[in-house]
Image 1: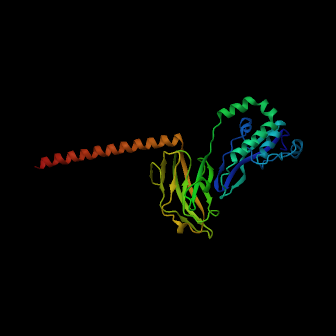
Image 2: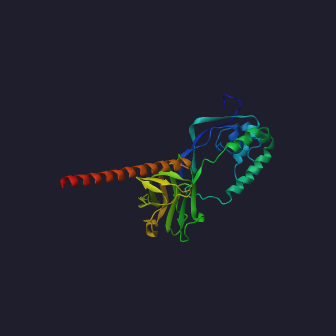
Image 3: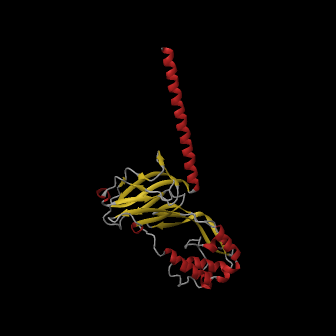
Length: 301
């Protein structure tokens, strides 16, 4: 900021911790990306004079995204953006956060307000804006823990996390759920090849207990690797009954996503073909050995 008077926004890389432990995969700054969604977190640095010139945050942004509206105001002034290539911000994800049922409608309302407030700015860059919308795609997926409190598994009694391939630990808080009966963990909402390193219950006294046996709807698994060809992968824990869940305060899952979506399906098909080839080779070897034994038997006679 001191070195370049045209710079108006400075931020860095960021990391998520708490409910999810991973680097926050924000894209590098570009006007195209910024016109479609907020890619600059709220604790970026800016000039007091710019804040005063645009009037600060819009109090009409009642559902949030007021920082996005503010950044667009600074961009409309012609300010440049700098992203420092270091992790300078740590954002806590609450382990008991639940998906808000009105989240989509709230975002639509706020982005509609943003568009009307910055209509001229969007209009000047309409080609960039529309091009990014056409080229963009969702890079996040959802991991979810279902909690049975006597009513079975349902979205109403669940906790959700946004995940991507870089996520290696997911934490869920169970403190708001009374009378725990059972748990079901859906690692992602797309076909996946993943490695489950550990799944543990946590307790208020600091204890951690492995959940024990893990059942799933995976097509197959071997040596801790799970191959899901379904868009709804599920893991259940047959040894977790009501008594074992008593006093549990959370569930911590450590895992590695090795392939997702079409890459996962390609890996599954390749592994299946390799297995089939091994089985055929084994069958041929067994047939050859049987024929050899029969031949040797005839020689003996």
